[in-house]
Image 1 (tube, one colour):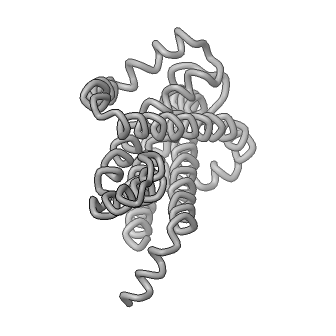
Image 2: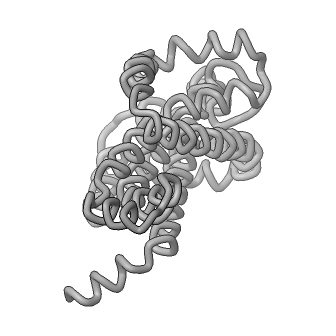
Image 3: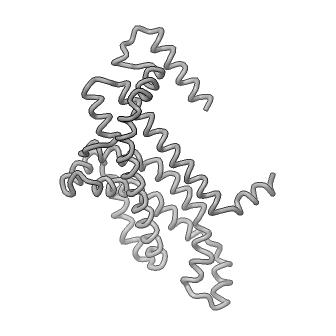
Length: 245
């Protein structure tokens, strides 16, 4: 936080002391003032963005989990599907977004698809890696006691994957808002992406940065939510940390 505060202070001082035009580089105080003044417009455009972000991320989470389970139970699927998934992550979102909007219209569907596209892969890789990290002795013990493969998965492999999963979740959630905004840039009636585009076309960098501030706060809030969910889902981590301290 100290480094961020220092950077903002330096930005404010430079914008005030130098002769740079506010239409080129507005001061942080001006950006904040415009964000407060335009709060209703920003709120109206934030709601569609957060709706697309949450819906797309929920679909991404479901797809990543289902695919990870299938890959864990049927090993040949990893060799068959992973190259396709890797290729999907190399596709530039700027080029894909207009096509998805063209194919599926200007509604919520293309935004959900684009958010899912940019967020599911880190979670998928994290889950698969987490399953593979399971202690073989635990799996062997459960198997010797007559546990089925599904029961071994639920009792050993799935819990072992949780730290990996939440690491992938934190990575993915930082891309979710960006994916939704890119989708709105390609075509939407409302959203932070459209708001930024209109502000840019009107030569209002202060409004562009106000929308960027909102998107950054959304990302931070979602990241914090994943941390809280991890603490609730893995209480033993806190106990272990307390024991070590």
